[in-house]
Image (cartoon, rainbow, N blue to C red; front, side, top):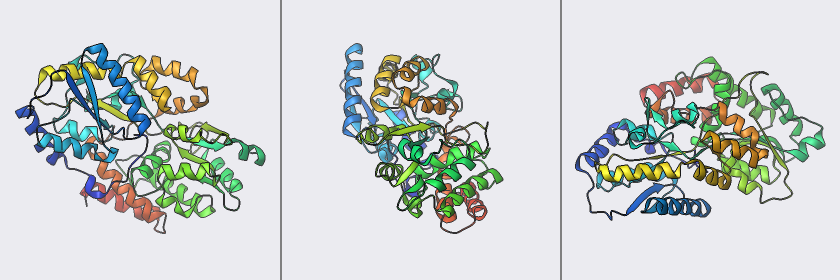
Length: 412
């Protein structure tokens, strides 16, 4: 997932059929305008000043090595897909698109992307889970520079003063959160809003409990949502949880209004601006001791659109290979606090940022949201978002998830 999620409306889910019409036209007719043969464009979501600068520096280095100029065009994350489609319809696709990995399968299924292996990119030093993260139906379309996932952040001072240890199981998390809830301070903060933020945060609870996105009304998924409801019922979660994004959760934690939070490494840069805040990180608690803590892989992947211009596609592949090289991954990961996708770079990263070692462990067990559903994931995500809103405001988890399953399979 990107640094921060963006709210998406139901209309943002674009059908594969619609994508197919647009990208097929682009691929069949080639580029609709003359391009400077030495200038290559990357469409990405690096709208934050720091991320835009880091990417510009990396692109400049790679461009110099390859003898070309690499420029970025940045739009908000929620607009990358629609921007790419508009460019496809006008036959002006960029040379490289950095998609959120959850959106990449939609473009791939429509025939809009090039198999990176045919462009010379290998995956020898990339863990299987991260290769799958950038693949669709066994074809490697997207190279990740870094990945992220969720973890449990906790206020060291608050836990120490309360004489409590970091929770490792659901029972321990619930008990610890209850004990740490005092006055205006909640024991735990998480995002259960009606957007992808909430779904991303729910998957560790669903998957670690054996639940599956192919059966949203299964007992394991119901139990996971019931667990969230128990935290709310205890008063350990704010009622505002149903409207919070992950950025909101971080704000509450930094303000001292939450003793613990579920969040990701994209918050570390902001957390470190408050020197008086002593925070730690641990794996997300699991239903019972010994269970694997399975979180979602987040992040973006670099892809090469199928424009029909083979010469430009080959150079685009070289640019992707450079941007996702071991050296560039480590530089990017150390700047952004994300975990390098390359195993060798990740080993160095662990040594350089030992305080985030637990995050690297969490990444090792994480998996892609689209691994089972591919282009069908957005519809399931929307269904889950509605279920959270219903269940956490009074409806039974069973009823809310039964409705979600109906929506996911019917599309209504």
